Length: 205
Image (cartoon, rainbow, N blue to C red; front, side, top):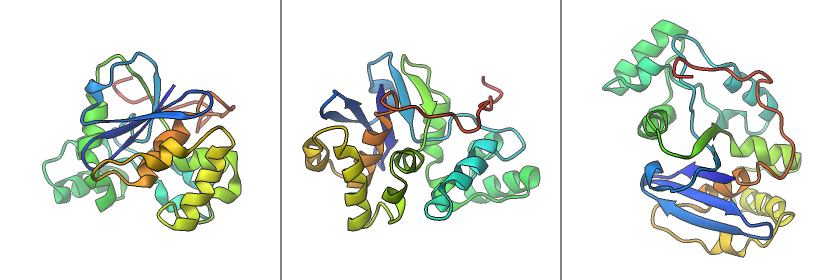
């Protein structure tokens, strides 16, 4: 199983070896040559005219600390709008909600995942949900703080040597990007239930 997190210039991948992690960087998803299941931190199922239940339930699970890290996925027409204002207007008309700047900034990544037709078997996942499932205390502090990073690294230490995680360096890739991909790579190591229990399916299946 592979964990994938988006970065400014591409994608970080992490593969758990049983005692450590192999970490790589790719500019495009299509460059990743694997037919494994890949847990990716990017919206996959794009709604047509309503907000997604998975986003609502994930926020509820992460309340009160990290709920704001889950934003509402824009509807499909908003994702493919030409401008931010147009996307907001489309989304608000259908759902009553405009989209955040954070959402719009990752639209290119959403489009890339939405159009992906390679060999990876992509499944949407969220790192903060994983961390809270493994240790509820690990998400008390932001992953952008020194305390938050260390708390998350302590969770990962239960599974192996984190030296490769801490040493990975790539321009425009932050340590929290690496840690997010790494925790998603542990998806087969512990039992997790999908959110919601019966996952939603978009118009593309």
